[in-house]
Image (tube, rainbow, N blue to C red; front, side, top):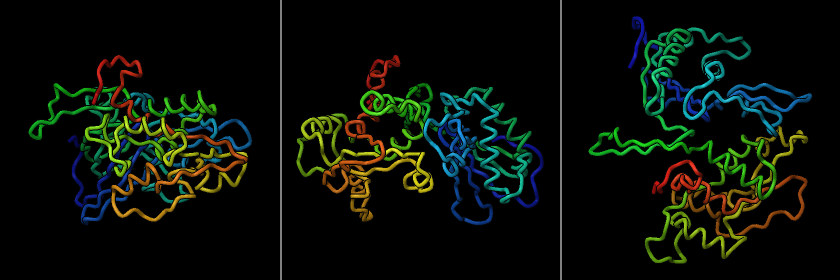
Length: 349
């Protein structure tokens, strides 16, 4: 913990700030009650839409809420490979998040001193460089005037850590960092779509949305027991998914995803269509949306719906993507990074 200045006689609510490569999450922790803190999520980016009459520059949550055209969205990302590389952009996102939490609607917000008298709980990656910590502390203490900072460890989407724990203690000499995370997986999914279907190389934001609602991890790499036809999909191994998709090209796990058309105002206005939607397969409007009775049932529904294959519409005015093997193959690269040519020579299983 690091602190600055004298304590206030009446403590203010604490602030929880998680700064990840994908999103910033901000919430307050009530001092005198046991209420659960409300957490607001903001995209950790500054976005610029394509040139035209609807040209916009959007910060943080404005990307999700106010954007009129997600096609070819240009993103200015404050964090690269887990480190803040653009402090001006990062401060702009923090300012927006603080304005949403502590400001008043319609009133210009000055972020100077926004955290005065408050204790801030923040997350940071393993093995953060001292220069990064000093720059962070300078903004928190000198600009936002936080009273104290508490640090916790965070794993972001720029990389993955393996952390051995023996008898409740982290073995720091054995901690390994793998430079593969959500950002790399999104880029690989863009390449897969572009090579086989539609050119999605400029659609990072939309592809990231599709990854979040479609992809999953197999329960294991290979079968440990004899396969039973009644085994639920959430218990299947990667090898079993491979065999199943080879033998059943159009099965109940295949999704057909309709891409949004930002030339049509109704696509932009409707939150159900602004990022596109699944028109056939698990999660589509054709499926029964009865709430699952258990976590296992929820996983099975996410993977295979209710066990029935759905055909996509024969004609549509929108472009459509087919997600089949990509749904389970993408995440498997976290366990076999050597396939990416990253220099890791062994499986991380």
